[in-house]
Amino acid sequence: MANEPPPSPHDKLILVIDDDDNMRAILTMCLTMEGFEVVTAVDGIDAAAKIEKKLPHLIICDLVMPGQGGFDFLRLLSGSAAGRVPVFIISGNSLDPAAINALKSETGAVEFFKKPIAGDALTAAVHRRLKTARA
Image (cartoon, rainbow, N blue to C red):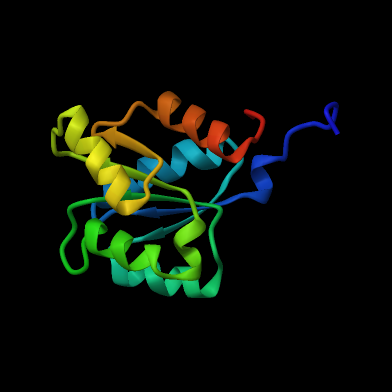
């Protein structure tokens, strides 16, 4: 119905994948303050194990990580049932708009954020994508 309130962020699980402890902590804090449930992973292998336990509503993934990096993880993800989960890519690398568009096209990602990430911009994009109301 048109007059129904948007879903609560409390009903949405977000998987944050980053090898940097501080970045995971910052992203977790920003997202939990908005009411989202957050689970974290340190690389693609850890993320795959978390996805097997519970499918998230959105994935935020760093590109460059030791072990299985974000790019390899996202390529594998696209061929699985979790491939329909929207993905936000985060990276410390500077990429031009054409490279970002190519990366999004190849990985199926819907957003790209350069580190350092503005928490307000990220949480606003998460709310838009998940159609949730801000806390």
